[in-house]
Image 1 (spheres, rainbow, N blue to C red):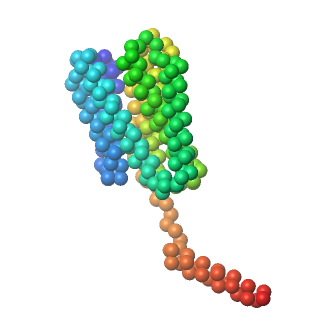
Image 2 (image 1 turned 135 degrees about the vertical axis):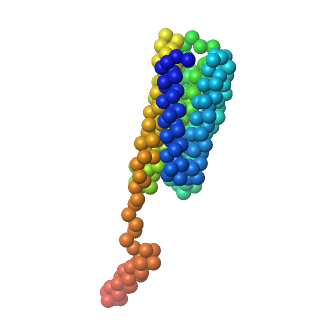
Image 3 (image 1 turned 120 degrees about the vertical axis):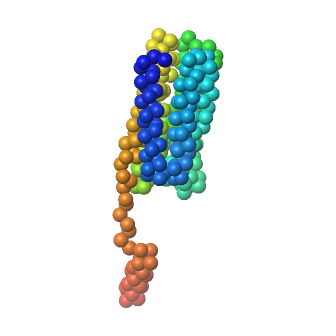
Length: 249
């Protein structure tokens, strides 16, 4: 294992341990169950990857087999945080149309790029793997843009932890797509760059999660009036309005 690769792996594992420690410290395992499972999965895969790193063929098979679970858990973790904020809106027909349209655009864009700019100097299996990675990355990036767009549109305030998690996944997916672009444009001429980009992308994601989990969650000011007080005030306003109507008659 090359020195830089070893250092990258050690840094990734260290940051992932910090993410898990913060989730446990903040007692967020139940609130973000799938993100917690994903974090544990990444850590386990990293240690198993070290164990088989001495055999290039075994490592290749293990890495891409583990990617299947990684993708499933990534999608589940993003979906979990998204639904925490927009569960009620997902029942609305217009919201479903916006969601489906954005996902459709992401899939069409990824498909067009895979057809128009296939990876250079790659066999069918590698091409399929790279195109799938690009499609998933594009999908998650679009999902993140949709999430933050809706946050802005609706003026949602209670979203700090959820936004931090989705932001990390969005950063990871957005930066990692440059690996596909590099491989698609230059083939294996810059192989080291195309292989290092995903590692750096995930380190940025981990740093984002750690930053957000270290920050205390903002407490929103409690409403000044209870629901009963608001109803009483509304009844008082209605009574005043009825008085004016009677006088006008």
